[in-house]
Figure 1 (cartoon, rainbow, N blue to C red):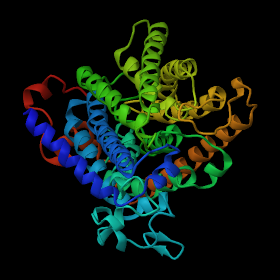
Figure 2: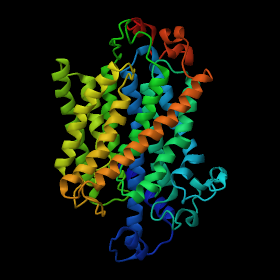
Figure 3: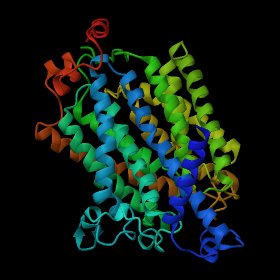
Figure 4: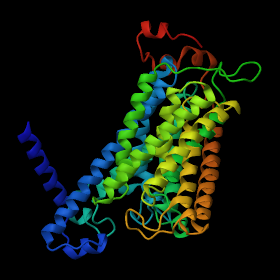
Length: 474
Protein backbone atom coordinates (compact mmCIF):
# COMPACT_ATOMS: atom_id res chain seq x y z
CA UNK A 1 0.00 0.00 0.00
CA UNK A 2 2.82 2.38 0.88
CA UNK A 3 4.50 1.73 -2.47
CA UNK A 4 1.24 2.50 -4.25
CA UNK A 5 0.89 5.80 -2.40
CA UNK A 6 4.45 6.84 -3.17
CA UNK A 7 4.08 5.80 -6.81
CA UNK A 8 0.77 7.71 -7.08
CA UNK A 9 2.35 10.80 -5.60
CA UNK A 10 5.19 10.68 -8.10
CA UNK A 11 2.76 10.32 -11.00
CA UNK A 12 0.73 13.30 -9.74
CA UNK A 13 3.85 15.43 -9.43
CA UNK A 14 5.01 14.52 -12.94
CA UNK A 15 1.56 15.27 -14.35
CA UNK A 16 1.50 18.71 -12.79
CA UNK A 17 4.97 19.42 -14.13
CA UNK A 18 3.47 18.91 -17.57
CA UNK A 19 0.49 21.06 -16.67
CA UNK A 20 2.72 23.86 -15.47
CA UNK A 21 4.48 24.01 -18.82
CA UNK A 22 7.82 25.65 -19.62
CA UNK A 23 8.69 28.61 -17.42
CA UNK A 24 11.67 30.42 -16.03
CA UNK A 25 12.62 31.06 -12.44
CA UNK A 26 12.17 34.77 -13.06
CA UNK A 27 8.51 34.28 -14.04
CA UNK A 28 7.75 32.55 -10.76
CA UNK A 29 9.66 35.14 -8.77
CA UNK A 30 7.69 37.95 -10.44
CA UNK A 31 4.32 36.28 -9.83
CA UNK A 32 4.89 35.37 -6.18
CA UNK A 33 7.57 37.79 -5.08
CA UNK A 34 9.63 34.76 -4.05
CA UNK A 35 13.31 34.31 -4.68
CA UNK A 36 14.22 31.05 -6.41
CA UNK A 37 17.69 29.94 -7.37
CA UNK A 38 17.04 27.61 -10.28
CA UNK A 39 14.53 26.54 -12.89
CA UNK A 40 14.08 23.23 -11.08
CA UNK A 41 13.20 25.01 -7.87
CA UNK A 42 10.71 27.16 -9.75
CA UNK A 43 9.08 24.08 -11.22
CA UNK A 44 8.80 22.47 -7.79
CA UNK A 45 7.09 25.63 -6.53
CA UNK A 46 4.59 25.56 -9.39
CA UNK A 47 3.84 21.87 -8.86
CA UNK A 48 3.28 22.42 -5.15
CA UNK A 49 0.92 25.34 -5.79
CA UNK A 50 -1.14 23.35 -8.29
CA UNK A 51 -1.38 20.29 -6.05
CA UNK A 52 -2.39 22.47 -3.12
CA UNK A 53 -5.16 24.28 -5.01
CA UNK A 54 -6.43 21.00 -6.46
CA UNK A 55 -6.68 19.44 -2.98
CA UNK A 56 -8.32 22.61 -1.65
CA UNK A 57 -10.90 22.28 -4.43
CA UNK A 58 -11.54 18.67 -3.39
CA UNK A 59 -12.25 19.88 0.14
CA UNK A 60 -14.65 22.53 -1.17
CA UNK A 61 -16.49 19.87 -3.15
CA UNK A 62 -16.69 17.87 0.09
CA UNK A 63 -18.96 20.63 1.34
CA UNK A 64 -21.68 19.36 -1.01
CA UNK A 65 -22.40 16.22 1.09
CA UNK A 66 -22.10 18.45 4.14
CA UNK A 67 -24.86 20.74 2.92
CA UNK A 68 -26.94 17.73 1.89
CA UNK A 69 -26.74 16.14 5.34
CA UNK A 70 -27.48 19.40 7.17
CA UNK A 71 -30.53 20.07 5.01
CA UNK A 72 -31.82 16.50 5.10
CA UNK A 73 -31.36 16.21 8.85
CA UNK A 74 -33.13 19.48 9.64
CA UNK A 75 -36.16 18.68 7.44
CA UNK A 76 -38.72 15.88 7.33
CA UNK A 77 -37.85 12.26 6.59
CA UNK A 78 -40.40 12.19 3.76
CA UNK A 79 -38.25 14.68 1.82
CA UNK A 80 -34.78 13.22 2.45
CA UNK A 81 -34.28 11.76 -1.04
CA UNK A 82 -35.48 15.01 -2.62
CA UNK A 83 -32.90 16.97 -0.62
CA UNK A 84 -30.14 14.60 -1.67
CA UNK A 85 -31.19 14.77 -5.32
CA UNK A 86 -31.20 18.56 -5.32
CA UNK A 87 -27.68 18.66 -3.90
CA UNK A 88 -26.48 16.12 -6.43
CA UNK A 89 -27.85 18.22 -9.26
CA UNK A 90 -26.43 21.44 -7.83
CA UNK A 91 -23.02 19.89 -8.30
CA UNK A 92 -23.72 18.39 -11.73
CA UNK A 93 -25.52 21.38 -13.23
CA UNK A 94 -23.31 23.88 -11.44
CA UNK A 95 -20.07 22.54 -12.89
CA UNK A 96 -21.39 22.37 -16.45
CA UNK A 97 -23.28 25.69 -16.42
CA UNK A 98 -20.31 27.47 -14.87
CA UNK A 99 -17.99 25.95 -17.46
CA UNK A 100 -20.22 26.80 -20.42
CA UNK A 101 -21.22 30.34 -19.46
CA UNK A 102 -20.53 31.41 -15.88
CA UNK A 103 -16.73 31.17 -15.94
CA UNK A 104 -16.52 33.63 -18.82
CA UNK A 105 -18.82 36.11 -17.08
CA UNK A 106 -16.98 35.85 -13.76
CA UNK A 107 -13.55 36.30 -15.31
CA UNK A 108 -14.20 38.15 -18.58
CA UNK A 109 -10.55 38.70 -19.45
CA UNK A 110 -9.58 35.06 -19.20
CA UNK A 111 -11.46 33.25 -21.99
CA UNK A 112 -12.06 35.46 -24.99
CA UNK A 113 -15.01 34.14 -26.94
CA UNK A 114 -16.88 32.44 -24.10
CA UNK A 115 -18.56 35.64 -23.05
CA UNK A 116 -17.49 38.68 -25.01
CA UNK A 117 -18.78 42.13 -25.85
CA UNK A 118 -20.43 40.53 -28.87
CA UNK A 119 -22.57 38.32 -26.64
CA UNK A 120 -22.60 34.76 -25.36
CA UNK A 121 -20.56 32.08 -27.01
CA UNK A 122 -19.92 28.58 -25.66
CA UNK A 123 -17.64 27.23 -28.37
CA UNK A 124 -14.69 27.27 -25.96
CA UNK A 125 -16.47 24.80 -23.69
CA UNK A 126 -17.13 22.30 -26.47
CA UNK A 127 -13.64 22.76 -27.90
CA UNK A 128 -12.29 21.31 -24.67
CA UNK A 129 -10.35 24.35 -23.45
CA UNK A 130 -10.54 23.16 -19.85
CA UNK A 131 -9.09 19.73 -20.58
CA UNK A 132 -6.43 20.66 -23.14
CA UNK A 133 -3.22 19.14 -21.73
CA UNK A 134 -0.79 20.78 -24.10
CA UNK A 135 1.87 22.92 -22.36
CA UNK A 136 0.99 25.83 -24.65
CA UNK A 137 -2.63 25.83 -23.46
CA UNK A 138 -1.91 25.27 -19.78
CA UNK A 139 0.98 27.65 -19.23
CA UNK A 140 -0.36 30.80 -20.87
CA UNK A 141 0.49 34.13 -19.28
CA UNK A 142 -3.15 34.64 -18.30
CA UNK A 143 -3.17 31.70 -15.89
CA UNK A 144 0.42 30.96 -14.96
CA UNK A 145 1.40 29.54 -12.52
CA UNK A 146 -1.97 27.81 -11.93
CA UNK A 147 -2.89 25.35 -14.67
CA UNK A 148 -6.24 26.13 -16.29
CA UNK A 149 -8.01 22.93 -15.15
CA UNK A 150 -6.84 23.44 -11.56
CA UNK A 151 -8.00 27.06 -11.52
CA UNK A 152 -11.38 26.17 -13.01
CA UNK A 153 -11.87 23.15 -10.72
CA UNK A 154 -11.40 25.31 -7.62
CA UNK A 155 -13.69 28.10 -8.88
CA UNK A 156 -16.41 25.68 -10.03
CA UNK A 157 -16.55 24.22 -6.53
CA UNK A 158 -17.35 27.72 -5.21
CA UNK A 159 -20.08 28.19 -7.81
CA UNK A 160 -21.76 24.92 -6.83
CA UNK A 161 -21.54 25.95 -3.17
CA UNK A 162 -23.36 29.23 -3.82
CA UNK A 163 -26.16 27.39 -5.63
CA UNK A 164 -26.68 24.66 -3.05
CA UNK A 165 -27.22 27.13 -0.17
CA UNK A 166 -30.77 27.72 -1.43
CA UNK A 167 -31.81 24.07 -1.24
CA UNK A 168 -32.61 24.03 2.48
CA UNK A 169 -34.57 27.30 2.43
CA UNK A 170 -37.02 25.97 -0.16
CA UNK A 171 -37.14 22.41 1.19
CA UNK A 172 -40.34 20.40 1.36
CA UNK A 173 -42.46 22.30 -1.17
CA UNK A 174 -40.50 22.94 -4.38
CA UNK A 175 -40.96 21.16 -7.70
CA UNK A 176 -37.79 19.44 -8.78
CA UNK A 177 -37.93 20.81 -12.33
CA UNK A 178 -38.19 24.36 -10.99
CA UNK A 179 -35.20 23.77 -8.76
CA UNK A 180 -33.17 22.54 -11.74
CA UNK A 181 -33.96 25.79 -13.56
CA UNK A 182 -32.89 27.80 -10.52
CA UNK A 183 -29.61 25.92 -10.15
CA UNK A 184 -28.66 26.45 -13.80
CA UNK A 185 -29.51 30.16 -13.80
CA UNK A 186 -27.65 30.92 -10.57
CA UNK A 187 -24.41 29.18 -11.60
CA UNK A 188 -24.53 30.43 -15.19
CA UNK A 189 -25.51 34.05 -14.56
CA UNK A 190 -26.34 35.41 -11.08
CA UNK A 191 -23.32 34.13 -9.15
CA UNK A 192 -20.81 34.84 -11.98
CA UNK A 193 -22.02 38.43 -12.34
CA UNK A 194 -21.43 39.06 -8.63
CA UNK A 195 -18.01 37.36 -8.76
CA UNK A 196 -16.96 39.50 -11.73
CA UNK A 197 -17.35 42.65 -9.62
CA UNK A 198 -14.48 41.64 -7.29
CA UNK A 199 -12.56 38.49 -8.25
CA UNK A 200 -12.96 39.30 -11.93
CA UNK A 201 -11.24 42.67 -11.39
CA UNK A 202 -14.50 44.62 -11.67
CA UNK A 203 -15.81 47.74 -9.99
CA UNK A 204 -15.80 46.40 -6.42
CA UNK A 205 -12.17 45.47 -6.80
CA UNK A 206 -11.35 48.98 -7.99
CA UNK A 207 -13.35 50.41 -5.09
CA UNK A 208 -11.15 48.66 -2.53
CA UNK A 209 -13.78 46.16 -1.35
CA UNK A 210 -12.27 43.14 0.45
CA UNK A 211 -13.75 39.64 0.23
CA UNK A 212 -10.94 37.13 0.51
CA UNK A 213 -12.97 33.90 0.38
CA UNK A 214 -16.54 34.97 -0.29
CA UNK A 215 -18.61 36.15 2.69
CA UNK A 216 -20.36 38.42 0.20
CA UNK A 217 -19.66 36.99 -3.23
CA UNK A 218 -20.49 33.37 -2.36
CA UNK A 219 -22.51 33.29 0.85
CA UNK A 220 -24.58 36.44 0.49
CA UNK A 221 -25.39 35.38 -3.08
CA UNK A 222 -26.69 32.04 -1.85
CA UNK A 223 -28.31 33.55 1.23
CA UNK A 224 -30.28 36.30 -0.47
CA UNK A 225 -31.34 33.92 -3.25
CA UNK A 226 -32.58 31.65 -0.44
CA UNK A 227 -34.57 34.52 1.07
CA UNK A 228 -36.17 35.31 -2.27
CA UNK A 229 -37.08 31.67 -2.83
CA UNK A 230 -38.59 31.23 0.63
CA UNK A 231 -40.67 34.41 0.30
CA UNK A 232 -42.01 33.62 -3.18
CA UNK A 233 -42.81 30.01 -2.25
CA UNK A 234 -44.49 30.79 1.05
CA UNK A 235 -44.30 28.62 4.17
CA UNK A 236 -44.75 24.86 4.36
CA UNK A 237 -48.22 23.53 5.12
CA UNK A 238 -48.66 23.45 8.89
CA UNK A 239 -45.79 25.79 9.71
CA UNK A 240 -48.06 28.58 10.95
CA UNK A 241 -51.28 28.30 12.94
CA UNK A 242 -54.50 30.21 12.38
CA UNK A 243 -53.20 32.88 14.75
CA UNK A 244 -50.10 33.35 12.59
CA UNK A 245 -47.73 32.00 15.21
CA UNK A 246 -45.00 29.63 14.00
CA UNK A 247 -45.17 25.95 14.86
CA UNK A 248 -42.17 23.69 15.33
CA UNK A 249 -41.66 21.24 12.45
CA UNK A 250 -38.64 19.40 13.83
CA UNK A 251 -36.07 17.90 11.52
CA UNK A 252 -35.98 14.12 11.45
CA UNK A 253 -32.29 13.56 12.32
CA UNK A 254 -30.09 15.85 14.39
CA UNK A 255 -27.18 13.33 14.11
CA UNK A 256 -27.30 13.60 10.31
CA UNK A 257 -27.44 17.38 10.46
CA UNK A 258 -24.49 17.68 12.84
CA UNK A 259 -22.47 15.21 10.76
CA UNK A 260 -23.12 17.59 7.88
CA UNK A 261 -21.93 20.55 9.97
CA UNK A 262 -18.67 18.75 10.72
CA UNK A 263 -18.20 17.88 7.03
CA UNK A 264 -18.70 21.54 6.18
CA UNK A 265 -16.20 22.50 8.88
CA UNK A 266 -13.62 20.21 7.24
CA UNK A 267 -14.48 21.51 3.78
CA UNK A 268 -13.85 25.06 4.94
CA UNK A 269 -10.16 24.21 5.31
CA UNK A 270 -10.15 24.16 1.52
CA UNK A 271 -12.48 27.14 1.18
CA UNK A 272 -10.43 29.64 3.20
CA UNK A 273 -6.79 28.46 3.01
CA UNK A 274 -7.27 27.56 -0.67
CA UNK A 275 -8.28 31.13 -1.42
CA UNK A 276 -4.67 32.12 -0.77
CA UNK A 277 -4.14 30.54 -4.24
CA UNK A 278 -0.61 29.47 -3.45
CA UNK A 279 1.12 27.14 -1.00
CA UNK A 280 2.91 29.43 1.43
CA UNK A 281 3.15 29.90 5.16
CA UNK A 282 0.02 32.05 5.29
CA UNK A 283 -1.97 28.86 4.69
CA UNK A 284 -1.61 27.25 8.16
CA UNK A 285 -2.32 30.60 9.85
CA UNK A 286 -5.52 30.99 7.83
CA UNK A 287 -6.47 27.41 8.75
CA UNK A 288 -6.02 28.06 12.48
CA UNK A 289 -8.02 31.29 12.31
CA UNK A 290 -10.76 29.43 10.42
CA UNK A 291 -10.99 27.02 13.36
CA UNK A 292 -11.05 29.92 15.83
CA UNK A 293 -13.97 31.57 14.01
CA UNK A 294 -15.97 28.34 13.86
CA UNK A 295 -15.39 27.54 17.53
CA UNK A 296 -16.30 31.07 18.59
CA UNK A 297 -19.47 30.99 16.50
CA UNK A 298 -20.58 27.63 17.83
CA UNK A 299 -19.94 28.56 21.46
CA UNK A 300 -21.68 31.92 21.14
CA UNK A 301 -24.72 30.37 19.44
CA UNK A 302 -24.98 27.71 22.15
CA UNK A 303 -24.98 30.36 24.89
CA UNK A 304 -27.40 32.59 23.02
CA UNK A 305 -29.88 29.75 22.46
CA UNK A 306 -29.54 28.76 26.12
CA UNK A 307 -30.44 32.30 27.21
CA UNK A 308 -33.27 32.84 24.70
CA UNK A 309 -34.74 29.33 24.51
CA UNK A 310 -33.98 28.02 28.03
CA UNK A 311 -31.98 25.11 26.59
CA UNK A 312 -28.69 24.83 24.62
CA UNK A 313 -30.19 24.00 21.23
CA UNK A 314 -28.16 21.57 19.11
CA UNK A 315 -29.20 22.86 15.71
CA UNK A 316 -28.53 26.46 16.76
CA UNK A 317 -25.04 25.50 17.91
CA UNK A 318 -24.42 23.81 14.56
CA UNK A 319 -25.64 26.86 12.68
CA UNK A 320 -23.43 28.98 14.92
CA UNK A 321 -20.35 27.08 13.74
CA UNK A 322 -21.39 27.67 10.13
CA UNK A 323 -22.19 31.33 10.86
CA UNK A 324 -18.68 31.88 12.23
CA UNK A 325 -17.17 30.23 9.17
CA UNK A 326 -19.30 32.30 6.79
CA UNK A 327 -18.54 35.59 8.52
CA UNK A 328 -14.76 35.13 8.59
CA UNK A 329 -14.43 34.36 4.87
CA UNK A 330 -14.19 38.03 3.94
CA UNK A 331 -11.45 39.27 6.24
CA UNK A 332 -9.59 36.21 7.45
CA UNK A 333 -6.36 37.19 5.67
CA UNK A 334 -6.61 40.71 7.10
CA UNK A 335 -7.38 40.04 10.78
CA UNK A 336 -5.57 39.15 13.99
CA UNK A 337 -6.69 36.21 16.11
CA UNK A 338 -8.72 38.61 18.28
CA UNK A 339 -10.61 40.11 15.36
CA UNK A 340 -11.26 36.63 14.03
CA UNK A 341 -12.74 35.40 17.30
CA UNK A 342 -14.89 38.50 17.73
CA UNK A 343 -16.17 38.12 14.16
CA UNK A 344 -17.05 34.47 14.70
CA UNK A 345 -18.56 35.04 18.14
CA UNK A 346 -20.79 37.91 17.02
CA UNK A 347 -21.94 35.79 14.07
CA UNK A 348 -22.96 33.05 16.51
CA UNK A 349 -25.17 35.49 18.39
CA UNK A 350 -26.58 37.05 15.24
CA UNK A 351 -27.57 33.75 13.64
CA UNK A 352 -29.75 32.67 16.58
CA UNK A 353 -31.54 36.02 16.76
CA UNK A 354 -31.95 36.10 12.99
CA UNK A 355 -33.39 32.57 12.75
CA UNK A 356 -35.96 33.39 15.43
CA UNK A 357 -36.77 36.77 13.90
CA UNK A 358 -37.17 35.45 10.36
CA UNK A 359 -39.53 32.74 11.62
CA UNK A 360 -41.65 35.25 13.51
CA UNK A 361 -41.80 37.43 10.38
CA UNK A 362 -43.65 34.64 8.57
CA UNK A 363 -40.76 33.48 6.38
CA UNK A 364 -40.28 29.72 6.47
CA UNK A 365 -36.58 28.90 6.11
CA UNK A 366 -36.32 25.32 7.46
CA UNK A 367 -32.53 25.27 7.88
CA UNK A 368 -31.80 28.95 8.51
CA UNK A 369 -30.00 29.39 5.19
CA UNK A 370 -30.64 33.12 4.93
CA UNK A 371 -29.59 33.77 8.52
CA UNK A 372 -26.38 31.74 8.24
CA UNK A 373 -25.26 32.84 4.79
CA UNK A 374 -27.08 36.09 4.04
CA UNK A 375 -27.13 37.88 7.39
CA UNK A 376 -23.82 36.55 8.71
CA UNK A 377 -22.20 37.00 5.31
CA UNK A 378 -23.07 40.69 5.49
CA UNK A 379 -21.77 40.86 9.05
CA UNK A 380 -18.50 39.35 7.80
CA UNK A 381 -18.09 42.18 5.31
CA UNK A 382 -18.71 44.77 8.03
CA UNK A 383 -16.31 42.99 10.39
CA UNK A 384 -13.56 43.32 7.79
CA UNK A 385 -14.16 47.06 7.70
CA UNK A 386 -13.80 47.13 11.49
CA UNK A 387 -11.01 44.67 12.26
CA UNK A 388 -8.72 44.60 9.20
CA UNK A 389 -5.18 45.15 10.45
CA UNK A 390 -2.31 47.13 8.98
CA UNK A 391 -0.32 43.90 8.49
CA UNK A 392 -2.42 41.41 6.48
CA UNK A 393 -1.50 37.75 6.94
CA UNK A 394 -0.98 37.19 3.22
CA UNK A 395 1.22 40.25 2.76
CA UNK A 396 -1.28 42.11 0.59
CA UNK A 397 -1.42 45.89 0.69
CA UNK A 398 -4.92 46.55 1.98
CA UNK A 399 -6.59 49.36 3.90
CA UNK A 400 -6.83 49.07 7.67
CA UNK A 401 -10.21 48.84 9.35
CA UNK A 402 -11.90 51.46 11.48
CA UNK A 403 -10.66 50.01 14.79
CA UNK A 404 -7.08 49.77 13.54
CA UNK A 405 -6.63 53.41 12.58
CA UNK A 406 -7.75 53.20 8.97
CA UNK A 407 -10.77 55.44 9.32
CA UNK A 408 -14.21 54.67 7.92
CA UNK A 409 -13.15 54.32 4.27
CA UNK A 410 -12.86 50.55 4.16
CA UNK A 411 -16.02 50.09 6.23
CA UNK A 412 -17.91 52.29 3.77
CA UNK A 413 -16.59 50.22 0.85
CA UNK A 414 -17.73 47.04 2.60
CA UNK A 415 -21.21 48.47 3.22
CA UNK A 416 -21.55 49.53 -0.42
CA UNK A 417 -20.44 46.11 -1.65
CA UNK A 418 -22.75 44.24 0.72
CA UNK A 419 -25.80 46.36 -0.06
CA UNK A 420 -25.32 46.11 -3.82
CA UNK A 421 -24.83 42.32 -3.67
CA UNK A 422 -27.95 41.94 -1.51
CA UNK A 423 -30.15 44.12 -3.71
CA UNK A 424 -28.97 42.62 -7.00
CA UNK A 425 -29.21 38.98 -5.91
CA UNK A 426 -32.57 39.41 -4.16
CA UNK A 427 -34.04 41.20 -7.18
CA UNK A 428 -32.61 38.79 -9.77
CA UNK A 429 -33.46 35.65 -7.82
CA UNK A 430 -36.87 37.02 -6.87
CA UNK A 431 -37.70 37.71 -10.51
CA UNK A 432 -36.53 34.23 -11.44
CA UNK A 433 -38.67 32.57 -8.77
CA UNK A 434 -41.69 34.69 -9.72
CA UNK A 435 -41.36 33.61 -13.35
CA UNK A 436 -41.10 29.97 -12.30
CA UNK A 437 -44.17 30.41 -10.10
CA UNK A 438 -46.17 32.00 -12.91
CA UNK A 439 -45.19 29.11 -15.19
CA UNK A 440 -46.44 26.58 -12.62
CA UNK A 441 -42.93 25.19 -12.10
CA UNK A 442 -42.28 26.25 -8.53
CA UNK A 443 -44.52 24.79 -5.84
CA UNK A 444 -45.84 21.24 -5.62
CA UNK A 445 -49.51 20.40 -5.08
CA UNK A 446 -50.67 20.41 -1.43
CA UNK A 447 -51.39 16.68 -1.50
CA UNK A 448 -47.87 15.92 -2.72
CA UNK A 449 -46.39 18.25 -0.12
CA UNK A 450 -48.22 16.46 2.70
CA UNK A 451 -47.26 13.03 1.38
CA UNK A 452 -43.65 14.02 0.87
CA UNK A 453 -41.59 14.88 -2.20
CA UNK A 454 -39.60 11.66 -2.22
CA UNK A 455 -42.54 9.74 -3.71
CA UNK A 456 -44.23 12.44 -5.78
CA UNK A 457 -41.05 13.86 -7.32
CA UNK A 458 -38.72 10.84 -7.42
CA UNK A 459 -40.87 7.73 -7.13
CA UNK A 460 -39.22 6.17 -4.08
CA UNK A 461 -38.75 7.05 -0.41
CA UNK A 462 -35.46 8.09 1.08
CA UNK A 463 -36.07 5.69 3.96
CA UNK A 464 -37.86 2.41 4.36
CA UNK A 465 -41.54 2.34 5.43
CA UNK A 466 -40.69 1.40 9.02
CA UNK A 467 -38.72 4.62 9.48
CA UNK A 468 -41.30 6.78 7.71
CA UNK A 469 -44.12 5.37 9.83
CA UNK A 470 -42.45 6.77 12.92
CA UNK A 471 -42.22 10.26 11.42
CA UNK A 472 -45.55 10.44 9.58
CA UNK A 473 -46.87 13.64 11.15
CA UNK A 474 -47.59 16.72 9.00
